[in-house]
Amino acid sequence: MHMMVARPEQWVKPMAVAGANQYTFHLEATENPGALIKDIRENGMKVGLAIKPGTTVEYLAPWANQIDMALVMTVEPGFGGQKFMEDMMPKVHWLRTQFPSLDIEVDGGVGPDTVHKCAEPVGRSLSDILVRNFCKIG
Ligand SMILES: O=C(CO)[C@H](O)[C@H](O)COP(=O)(O)O
Image (cartoon, rainbow, N blue to C red; front, top):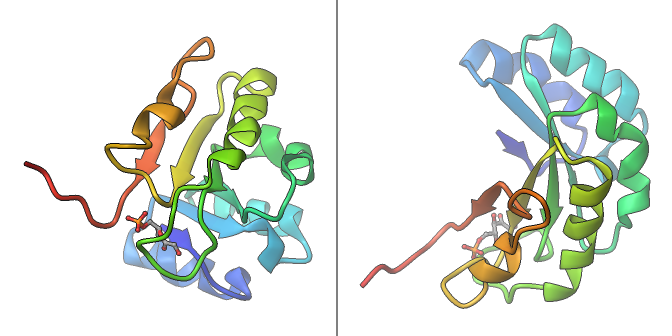
């Protein structure tokens, strides 16, 4: 579950009860990421940590060894259909280099014209999970 919400603390238990196996929250939305990570684990879920385009990857780095997945937003959160922000790719590259076993998700503007930019290999594939809400095939 990608929880693009304010006060993500309040939805941990309900999502676990609903059967979620991973809980991704936005680093910008909490004042205590460590406590939230612990709570998610204690509720039996994997931890995903997302950052908005304006947030530096160094802000995420202290938590990288405690999470299962880092999500680099390649659009501003809010709505679909936005243009892929290629200038977010250095964040992905840096994370892949510093934390080789960490799963990395890219969300926003991913499509036939941009997907290769997310997937160029750096040891292993640059990004592991690509999010696309609407995709026309054929
Ligand atoms: O919630 C989102 C952004 O707030 C979407 O996950 C993101 O925009 C992906 O959509 P698209 O298919 O348009 O790239």
